[in-house]
Image 1: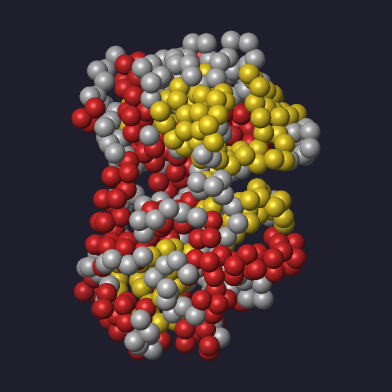
Image 2: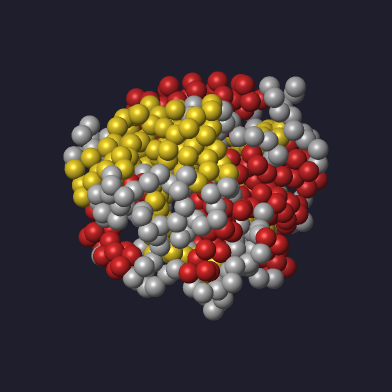
Length: 513
């Protein structure tokens, strides 16, 4: 199969590359092409586990969904998960190979990573008609050119034409485009086939002089100017949760309030997107200096450095606020690292996460966690093992999700497993997971993605409504997360197609210009 390629690079981070790649993938998919995304190296704390247990960046997974295909680690062969202190856990072809400093990674490991990237690319291009490649940051970082494996080096390997994206919402877009092109080598500058201006607000006709300037100054066509939008909830690589804390502009009196604790090393915060899409839920994030108040539910999310985040909770005063909420009867749910924080002790004898061998948890449940070097990554299917106030009536509900954690948790007196995992990476099992307190108000699990399960999510929200004395909403009000995502992908494709020169896009892909 002959594979055609195109690459999306940006003048900086957070210019919208991930979303535009998803849009272009969806356009090609809707036009009948077998298309896949590719990003050689992601740096992100939002990750996903594939069917065969490989870990990859969440943004590439979203792009695969937009392409109508199942994600594989060949689409994202290298994932860097920052652990703090200029160090990251390196995930190579879906499996962890250890923590490395930025210096050691670039100086000693890039060659091995590049070999994995080339192998993944060779496999992927055999199976697809089109591949849309995403770069990272800016291709014009002159100090990184020697060791970069995600921008122009990938474009040269794939012989891909490049679209350069600039974010006009932040200002300085014209200078960033001209400056980026100026800093590229003549050969790489020639590879740039067009420019896209992203996140434009206002009357687009007023921007026409700027389009003409860019085309005259750079000699490159401007494919389009994409309007700023917030109505579509397409997950990006690592959008800062503070920037998207309130999916609802103002809390309504008929909404239950869910407060997610914003940890410094928060991971997989996309777990909570489905809650924010429910019309009767007000979702917000609470970080340092924030006031937790009196929410109807507190959620402790996953963390890439659980021990440091636990220390942060205590030093910031958030731990005391959480304890005050629980004393008033507010339910609490912990996911993965957040689940571990709920216990009495967190032991790290091998210094897997930090230099601290023993840390006292919040003590909301009698359980202890011991960290070890083995990382668990699986897709799972589970059901409730024990129910409480939060999960009443959900014991017959099956749900799917995935595990990404290092460490094992032992339950003490008065604490029961919350779930039973009955399938793990395709194998039938009967393993306990998580924990639920005697009164049912505190619950935790290692399973990410539980709120993506529509019936479980609606049942949980209805139980929160009951605790407030409100009537539950019937099944007709239940939102289908999958269907909503498909609608958003289609709307995104229509938005982008309507604001770019699609004919020119195809000419670039087909090498007709």
